[in-house]
Image (cartoon, rainbow, N blue to C red; front, side, top):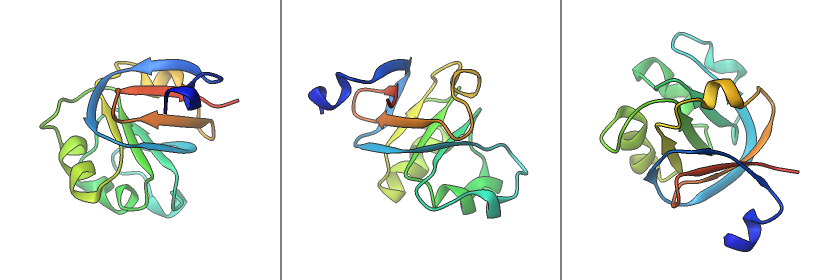
Length: 115
């Protein structure tokens, strides 16, 4: 994993809420958004997940949030679904743009911009 991160820019650090790594297209998604615009394998980027987002969460390759802890909604659901999750990045929804290709390292709690 470490050599995979060498050519990519570290853009966020947060709390590692579920281990593993995933690459994909970032999709900014907020409470009440229509999940039909969320594609299988997208990376869900939000302030904090809630039950209205579950349809998008089940399609997600990973989850990144601005706030939350290891017992927060995204952390618990990501563990149930077996996908990487980084919470409490403080500024994911500001630094990550829709469609940006990112790598989520749920083991270290880091998010990288891909070349």
